[in-house]
Amino acid sequence: MSLFDTHLHLDDEQFNGQRDVIVQRAAEAGVRTMVTVGTTAASSQHCLELARRFESVQAAVGIQPNYCAEAADGDWDTVLGLVEQPQVVALGETGLDRHWDYSPFPLQQDYFDRHLRLSQQTGLPFIVHMRDCGEEILQMLREAHTRGPLHGVMHSFTGDLATMQECLELGMHISFAGMVTYKKSDDLRSIATAVSDDRLLLETDAPWLSPHPCRGQRPNEPALLVHTAGCLAEARKMDFEVFSELVSSNAQAFFGRVESNR
Image (cartoon, rainbow, N blue to C red; front, side):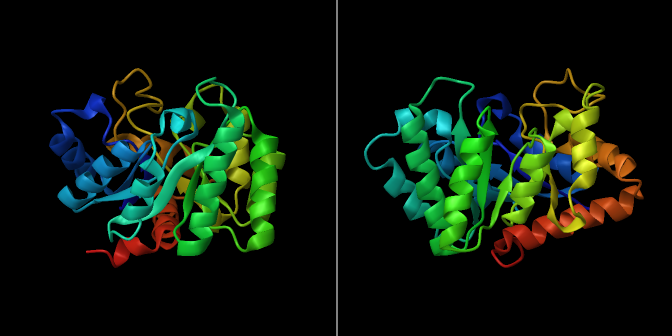
C-alpha cells in the first residue's frame, strides 16, 4: 500500500524538533510521498530545503492569499526563482479568502492571477485555497481557462456539488482533507463520492484538520492520511488497497515531476 499526501505544511513551527520522526511515521503508515506547501516567500524557501533533505518530500512554492498583504518587494521574484528547482512540483498555495480580513481582496486576486499565469507558462500545477468565495474563484478560473488548459487542484475542498462539478469541467482536480471524515460531514462525503475517479486527490493539510478518529490530535501529520483514505474508500464502496492505488496514481500523474526529480 502506498499513499500520497498532496498537501501539508511541514515547515510549520508545530513540527519543529520532530520532522524526522514525522516523516518516518509517514513511511511506516504507507505514506510514501508528500508535498509540503509554501504560504510566503520564506515559507516556500523552507519547503524547498525540506524537499532537499527528505527523499519522500516535494515542495510547492507560492504566496497564500492571507499573506499577500505581508509580501515585501522582491518576494514574488523569490518565488519565480524557485520554480526551476527540481524538487518544486507545484505552485501555491494560492487562491482567495473572504473568511479572514488579512489581505485586501483585489490584492488577493492579483496574486491568484500571477500564480495562474505562471502555471500556464511553466506547466507546473497550481494549488487553490478557497474560503467563502466560491463564485469569485470560479470567475477567475473561467477567465484563465480562456487562455489555455488549467492544471490545478482545489485543496481541502468543502464547496458545494455545483462548484465541484464546474471545477471538474474546467479541468481541475479535487482534494479532500480530514474534514471529510467528520461525523457531521455527510454532505461533503456525498460530494467526494461524485468526483470522477481520475480527478480525486487526498491530503492532510497537516498540522491542521486531523481526521476522525484522531480529530483532537495536535499536530495532524501525514501518517494519519490512512484514516481519510479509509473513510473515502468506504464511501465510494472500494477496496482500501485499490482506492489507495487509485488516488496515489492520480497524484503522481498530477504532479508530474515527482518521478523524475531525484
